[in-house]
Image (cartoon, rainbow, N blue to C red):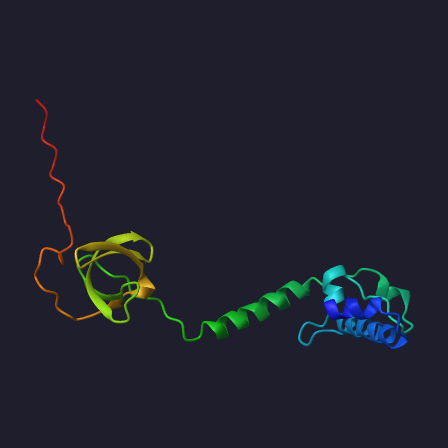
Length: 167
């Protein structure tokens, strides 16, 4: 677009003709009906056709809104969404105390860890190497790997004792 502005500033008759051709091509594209929709981009935006060099009747310049356009656009969006999510699957929720593998920042190998609990939907608190981390579910892999029985590996599980009765 910057090149088009620069060319329009020059007073060469060739560049002025080229600029008019570009604008005419854009106008033609806006007035051409889209396949499957039955209306042009200009009709969907402003409700009528744009004026062109071709002679047309005044009826085409009066706004007419197609109520089915929204339904057609939604059905096209639904088809696109279905094709995009074709191979997608939901991740299985993890349980507290489960062994998972995760990549720590700056490392290229997976580190085994123990799940402490779910903090938010799809967000888990993990304990690895004695440090607590918070990871998203998509960054965690279930594993059948066994962990060493150190205190650093076990999740902190505390049971709340029942409050004693005050006398």
